[in-house]
Length: 440
Image (tube, rainbow, N blue to C red; front, side):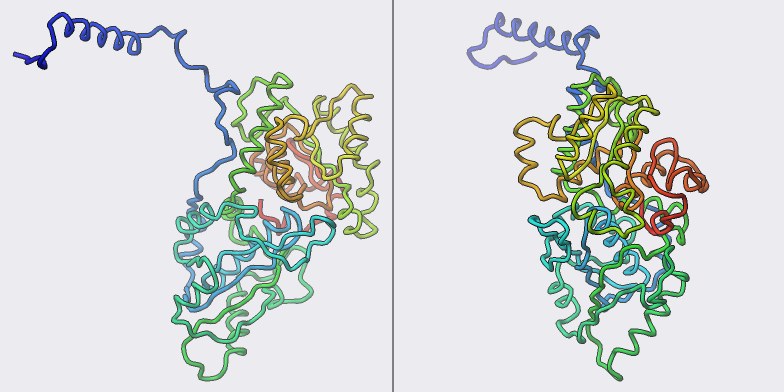
């Protein structure tokens, strides 16, 4: 027999029992119209649709498993400069050369540009990896995909792990071990680079040197490594060891949400590419671009050229909503006026984010704000950018992987890159370095 607590009547117990039954019936047998909203609505959208788990790649593990590792050999990577496309590729090349050498790696630093003069990128001022990327994702991805590579938090911790004895640090521009006149498609013989490095290192260590940590400071290495030399699977996954920092991803998600709510898009915002939604236009006319490109690129550096190409592409794609990425809002205003005359609408992240989100973004650097646009562009229905921009190529090549097209038809024209998802404007074959050496 059940014993009731002292002071509890049978009437009270019966009422409590009936309440429990009623609650169970309500939640266990509730009609379908009481269920939670469908996950396709923006109100239930995850706050970060760009989040991904740490990379676990069998293709990378296979390469790393065949590597002979030397824990006493430590590489640093503290010279990556430029915009997001430049820095991302330089960091990935550092890791790839580290794997080739069988070295350990100190968590890289990033050189930040001068916010007062965005054309000044070689400032010598460094920031931690977290300035752009998630350090935990980088660390965990390497642990899963390349467990033989030891990642040190700092150079000091690397030296301490080696017993505090070091040889004199050695500077190295890694691609120069094969040629200072590197082919535009990258190293001619990446498979022999380890032997080149070993010879170079032995020539610089003192004869009969006692065991000690050897520190090699890698110089910036940008468009240097032929990404498909390790196979398609490796090339298509290696870039995923880097993931943009959390607040960048959350703001980019908010941009997509704002676009969907403001322009009546009903599709799933979690899809890799969002069909029949918006045209992504990278308007690359900022001051640093005009100063940085050689004369042959000048025609595509002009606002008039880019605007005509972008508006034409958006019209041909039947996408009257144009999301623009640009660091020059005066040029965006010009494009907006031209688009309006053609019954098209131009919008930017500043137009669709809420006041508090804009305030948060205003505290970010020029490059960090550009990273928000980078992520939004990866989801565009169709994307367009210019051929002398690593930003445009990075976005387009990543989207090409998502599109699943095989072969090199996307590089045969009529533009520098042309597939069903993206166009990179320029002459076909004019920029062989980007599809050959830029990690998607």
